[in-house]
Image 1 (cartoon, helix red, strand yellow):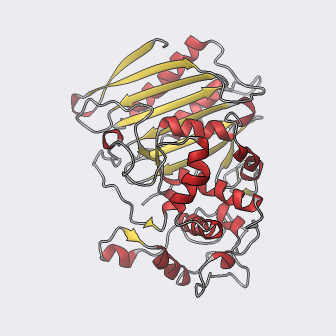
Image 2: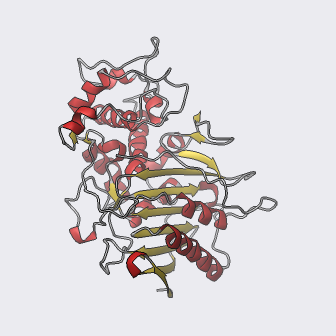
Image 3: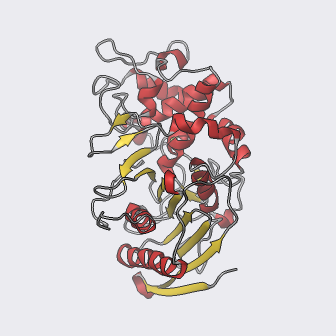
Length: 400
């Protein structure tokens, strides 16, 4: 076991928290090529620790976990508490909500059904809804599965939930979601403009579930992804994990928030998963080609850029994953996905060609992309390109 470094940071109400850093030179997870390394390991360790310490001192989340992969090297940073006013520090097995990062699982399930010849990316959604459900079109142009997967369907971010809020229910059934779909007008022609939509991914998840003949989306995700990749803690609800491992979520004002989003169970495949740093690092390593699996044949389909998202040069979306330049003028692009729920914020990003990645999980709904981006830029210096922390790309997060 490598050395352990502790830095004390003062937070609200004079509570002291710890930034704990563990560096592990782990065995490789699979075949590797053209990987980055930590180089000056001690210097990189200290620099990564400072990035996390600076962020937590300024933003003051309740707790946060940061995982870093650079080739064979692994590094984990733990900050704060799993619940306020406790001394329980989060670790790689603490369970966090990951919000829209869930969509990367649905995207892989879609690619699997396409590879098996069951579905096609240009299938109209109408083909994969129950009889009697009418999918809205725009001037005769129907929504395709590719439109849903790239957030270009023309569907709004969420359905109209006003009636649900008045009834004080937190449950949206799949049947009711389809009813709301029939009452929804598209904002534009499908396939032409990026417009983030949790609604669209919820519908895509249900379409894939129907095509696979599964009982529900979680059963499908666990059978086809979780079990084969060894993602033991990635689940939908609190059941099935040690309750002591669950982080309590907090809003930006550090107010504790409830579990159970308004949009469940219909939106499970769009934003419903909980996971751990350990699982999410393995999930990201798989996407970098570092975890041997038959599922690796799906990665080219999932990771091919398809549509400009209009944020700037090089900003495109694949299936769920978004491409962004690592920095202005960079030859590298990151693939990234973030997620926000009422009390959690997550950011997952990687540079595939250098096999570097960062996972940031927090139990406070405070955007944390800057942590991951600064670390990836640190690990991927480029000759003639200024090292800067400005201009951080922001993927579209999910919100309840």
